[in-house]
Length: 210
Image 1 (cartoon, helix red, strand yellow):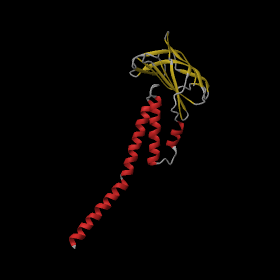
Image 2 (image 1 turned 45 degrees about the horizontal axis):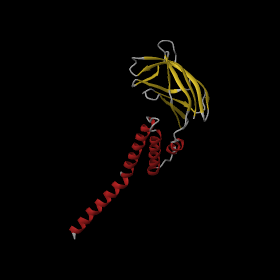
Image 3 (image 1 turned 90 degrees about the vertical axis):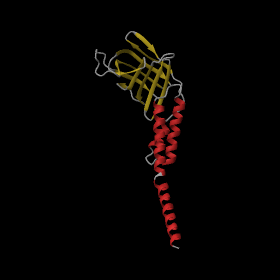
Image 4 (image 1 turned 30 degrees about the vertical axis):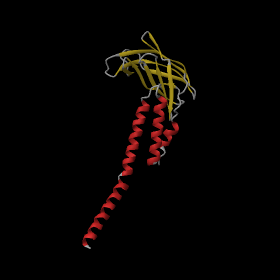
């Protein structure tokens, strides 16, 4: 009888332990996994190109929905992101161009995406590695409304040099910022990540419909 009681006690303890383990640690681990998947999908979406934008956006939206379904979303933050994601590739027409010194550079592949209140403009020049990116807040017009400006040239990223080294101070002016178009100008000195090379950006023009 003692042997039976001892075995029964051990079995009960093991069942209790397994029950506690499965109920206490598994959901947290699952939520960590889902959150990590969302973070990875967001990173891929943030670095998407015109060629894979729809794919990366759809994957990000799915990861967000999986996290909501698996872990809840009491604050509604994740659902707001889902609602703000438009995974259709917009048809964008118009002009996105700059001069680097005296050399003109026009971007003929243009995409516009909106996440929440931020509108992201991306341009590429066909058959080159030249790319341009910047953000504007939806509806905002006036001076210095262009944010997070980046120009990719020769596998290097150039950003506004503030203050300017040679007098061409960074500035922008958005005159139209509607649900279907962005119009404005920008100019200024850009510097690469190693602060080695400065590019003189002149006559920047954005005049696009989407």
